[in-house]
Image (tube, rainbow, N blue to C red; front, side, top):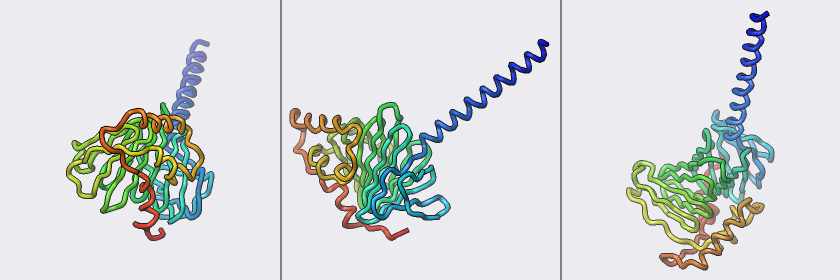
Length: 248
């Protein structure tokens, strides 16, 4: 009888452990998968085996997949933890494990809610990273990368010289030229102009933390910047007119 009970308990514990392991795997997998919530005009999914198909709302985007947008097109992807990734026109964005994004061309907006962990955006020039923030990145091969913080804090480092790094806070932008060996200082920008004019904000539903971004914009009027602010409205405009990639 005791032997039977011992085997019974061991069996129950084994099943319980397997169930926990599978649920943990499912949660981990869910955090690395995204779902297409907007696909305007010509948006496509590029699988790792080079197959391409049109993207539709509701499609799952798994690690190893890239999202491609044509001219005058845009897309939005949502993760299970409420993280959002928005793509502007003429953009190619690859999805890696965890929160690793490979920006090969174009512009993106990332919204990471509190508790969602950190994210990293890789380009051939520099790597931008942060956690619990809202940021934009624009990259044009052999030209430049722009990195803007709308809310929260982030950092950027040179791809081939990680020791060269800069920290940014809300209302700052940094522009890194291709071939740079040293990072410039971040510049103050006019957040209110960016909020009104950027297609990554104006042409999508309101961000979940829009009130926090608006508060940061209001704070700029109360605290004079250390240098004259610049108008960042060119973000996501250049990719509309230049660097148009051929269709996949």
